Structures are given as C-alpha cells and as structure tokens.
Image (cartoon, rainbow, N blue to C red; front, side, top):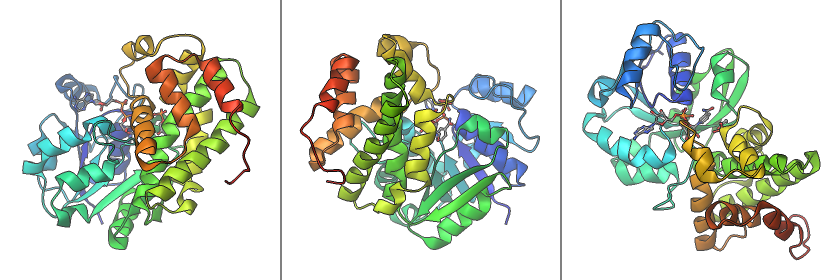
Length: 335
Ligand SMILES: NC(=O)C1=CN([C@@H]2O[C@H](COP(=O)(O)OP(=O)(O)OC[C@H]3O[C@@H](n4cnc5c(N)ncnc54)[C@H](O)[C@@H]3O)[C@@H](O)[C@H]2O)C=CC1
Ligand SMILES: O=C(CO)COP(=O)(O)O
C-alpha cells in the first residue's frame, strides 16, 4: 500500500530514507531544518551538505515548513539527532495527523532526562498515537543504503500491526526489514553502540590492533545487554541487527562518524577541536554522558562507558583509561 510519508530531518539518514521511500513509490515530503537546503534540494535534487553526490528521486518533495510536511500524511519518519527530538516533535504536535503512525530512526539517549527516544515520544504524544510508535535501527550507513548496497535492519513496535506496516513500507530489494517487538532493546542497541564505536576509534587512534577492537566489541555488547536487561529489554535483541550488527558495523566501518571522532581523540586531538569541525552529528558523544548517568542511576556496571565518560568529560588520558579497564578485578565471563 502506498503511504503519504512526512520525513522529518534531512541529514544523511533522513535524506537517504526519504529517497528510498520515494523510489519505492510512496508520496514523500522531506522536511529540512535549513531553508537553504530546501532550496538546493529543489533546484539540483542533491543534498550537498549531508549526502553529497547522490541524485535524489524526482518524486521527492522538500519543505522547511512543518505544517506542509505533515499535511495529509499517513506515516511519519522522524530522523533528527536524538537531543533535538523533543523540541522538533513538540513543535510538530499541532500539525501531526492523529491517525499517522510514527517511525523513529534517531539513535541516542536524552542527556537532560536520561529518556530513550521512545520515552521522549511517550512524554509528548497522545497515548493512542504513542501505541503506534516504531523504532527503526540496525547496521545501516546512509551512503551505502543510498548506493543501494544490500542492508538489513530491525523495526520494533509493541503493536504487531504497526511493525508489519513499517516492514511493508520500507522493505525494498536492497533494504530488508526484520520485525521485532522489543522497542527498548532495539533503541538501546542503537544508542550504546555509538559510545563503544568512539572507544574502538580511540583504540585505533592509539595504534592498538584487532585484538583490542574485538575485546571492546564483545565487552561493549556485554555492557549494553546488562543495561538492556535492567530496563526490560530481551537479551536476544542484542545478538541481533540492532545490537551486535550495528555494533560491529560502527566499530569497524570507515564511514562511522563516531569511530572517526574516536580515532582523532586517540591521535591526541581534543573533543572540542573535533566537534568544532563537524557539521554532522556523532551521537555517541552525548550518549556517553547519558549512558553513564543512566548506568549510575540503575546501578548497572558499565566499565567501558565509565572510562569513556572520564575521557570525554573529565579529561582523563586515554592510555590511563585503557590501563584501568585492563587491570580491574578479575572476573568470570558472563558474570
Ligand atoms: N547517517 C547514518 O548513516 C545514520 C544515522 N542514524 C541516526 O539518524 C539520526 C540523524 O542523523 P543524520 O541523518 O546522520 O544527521 P546528520 O549528522 O547527517 O545531519 C545533522 C542533522 O541535524 C539537523 N539539525 C541541526 N540542527 C538542528 C535543529 N536546531 N533543529 C532540527 N534539526 C537540526 C540537520 O538539519 C541535519 O538533519 C541520528 O540519531 C543518527 O544516529 C541512524 C542510522 C544511520
Ligand atoms: O548508525 C549508524 C550506522 O548504523 C551510523 O553511524 P555513525 O553515526 O557513527 O556514522
């Protein structure tokens, strides 16, 4: 069934997914925060700021006006950085059709409230509309999807009917969507992997090798699973696309912005220097702070997250953090 879809956020992922949905035959309007980006995309059908070199589908419409984006839509895909979801969706409320289902593709945890993205929606949306929320996450670099390279992701919703509708709306011959009912697990996988990807980048930047990266991926997975179980997620979700899948991609892939921030930190640059040069978002930087505070609040042991917090927010030298991780009390695996 063809949907009328409002895509909110014209960063690299929003633009890529809007293009995919338009190519599939849906009627899609892409909302961009930057008015100049709307003019550019209308004129040359390219987003040179966030997705350069990709020609956008002729059927795609662009706007800077939220009211216009939402007019008559049956589905909303919100893809703004997680720290902006509350603001953008609160501004959206007067225009949001009550029957539209909402798909969230942002990956992070809100710093001020420690809310997952779905908890932000729970705060904002009327209860009936919140029941239709789906989270889309998994190993998916925007550029590779835009180039139609085979990709598999997970879409989680508490309602099976919503999960099926999202699966049907997004699946193409190169983009395969798996259903999942574990919303919190799928969201936490996508949020925490960004912090571990910065850690993996730091390890690379320090000149460490494959052993260190594999250790970070595996122990990072143990940490995200522990947090997830404390928050009611299923362990199996973390072995899936939104957990292990995205963790491996982001800790090893050269396209990862989070990993690239880590590499530069490992090479000795400061976080403020690195972020000052970036227009795109590296969600893991803020999620380091929120994940650390969430772990403290819930009493969950997350030693990599803790050392990441000390490096990013308390200027702890990276080599000291590594030494501390390596010389903790000895433990049994799985404990
Ligand atoms: N790029 C990717 O490969 C993937 C990204 N994601 C997630 O998608 C979300 C969005 O990331 P990207 O599309 O990569 O963004 P991006 O890093 O390419 O672009 C930044 C985005 O932030 C928006 N923005 C900046 N200031 C704003 C404001 N005041 N109000 C509203 N919007 C503002 C920009 O318009 C732009 O859409 C993030 O949570 C990210 O983790 C998820 C999967 C893949
Ligand atoms: O979430 C992503 C891929 O699944 C994108 O990762 P980065 O934000 O690190 O580029």
